Length: 85
Image (cartoon, rainbow, N blue to C red):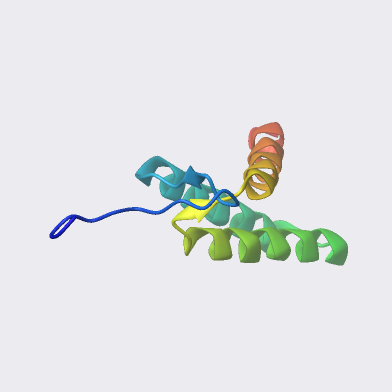
């Protein structure tokens, strides 16, 4: 395997981010950031800040686990439910 690059995926993190995932995370970060600026309720602001922090951490990764996938899908679903309101 001389000269070859091998990507090792652990069983704990079987999913690999692709460019479309990173772009989606950036969209979510921007949306949650815009909501913070117009939200008055402190608990909602704290939730949105926590989402942004989580997305920032996920954006640094190359692979993600099933549990992380579930959380990302929850955040995405929240965005989809409220983006047009």
